[in-house]
Image (cartoon, rainbow, N blue to C red; front, top):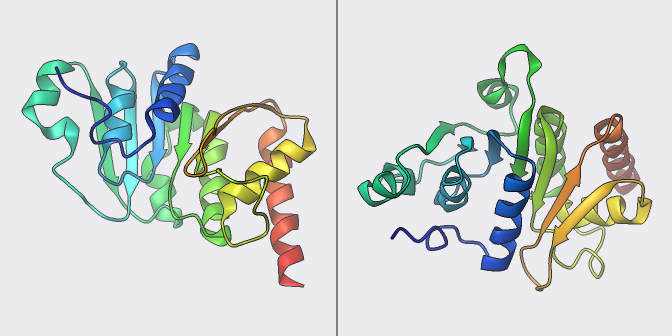
Length: 200
């Protein structure tokens, strides 16, 4: 039996939470920014979703390329894109036709404030539900150069968004935002205001 947790490089409880969200929303199309070893994409695809995953580095062979995985999940579909997620070209490589939305976008790219902002701005608008990785300690460390924590603190402090988090440890952590009309624009403006404030 193929172990979906082995290559995921995620805490089991946190990964289980992400997989449960994908099941709950019946996610058919998922976008992941930041493939790394490919374990998270492989786990999401094992549930029947079509996963597109992007990374600046190719770490193949990936789990979905291996015979053990193919036998365990013969219907799994994963498409890997080697590109810099922070570029316009990278974003165009994963954009769905006719501005169709991904059911779930999992952002786990480069986490500095500027890079994280670029990933949010380009990819969150492509999704219905957004999961942000590495939010741990957002309530203890703020305004350092780590957008996931800073973003999640702003979202939680605002209190108007529908969210869920898997974040019981002092590392990693996943925050989920169920976007409503206007949420993407509001959060983007919050990040931009935060970044401009830091420049002063």
